[in-house]
Image 1: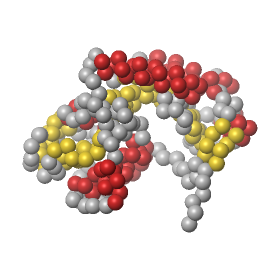
Image 2: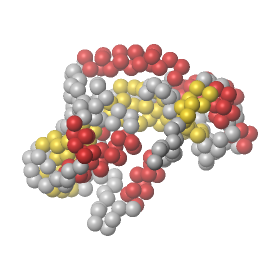
Image 3: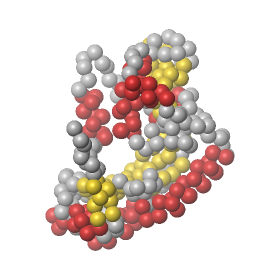
Image 4: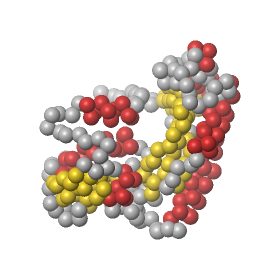
Length: 280
């Protein structure tokens, strides 16, 4: 069966659909869907079988270096023959991949619930999303619950002050929708992701019994889902063509220590922001 391809959307149609003349052209893939990541994770947690025990708000403080593996947490210590770690940037706190992963913060702002007049300024579609062509660009989403989201900005290893984040996101919002100046962003926050120098994700066995997937480079839901499935296959001793293909992919390259790391990262961010241009 032949799959339907996506299609390009030109400026005039974009303006009608999204309410802004900011964009000249876009590509709409076939079969794309909206996913609310928090709702997805919550739903998965609530649908686990009875044989699985889920401990929330339980910090893992250390993992032993030899087996049987001991996992120390704020609720006590657990031991296991096999442990899977999919903690992204937090893997470094457990002594893993400290010379392969850096943490980058990015930021989101959410409007209050908008009335019908304001919603009409955001295009005729009840909900839509724009993902930038460049990874340092700005993401936009119009939600069916009458809110609008702006996601942008990058900082190295620590969050920016809240006032600075709000000013940045408001500027980016109004540059696309100057007609929306009648309200402010109701919620502003930051979140961390793991970035590697060459874009490679670490996948596999770090030491006997300890299996790790980390370094998503901002594609957590997509890459994390399939890598988590394949990591479980590997831990269970299963074999598949897809697992073999995944193991053949190149992992993250070495990153120099501080202060050279910070200098290099800040230079790379500045260069990429320049390349991103009006995508930001």
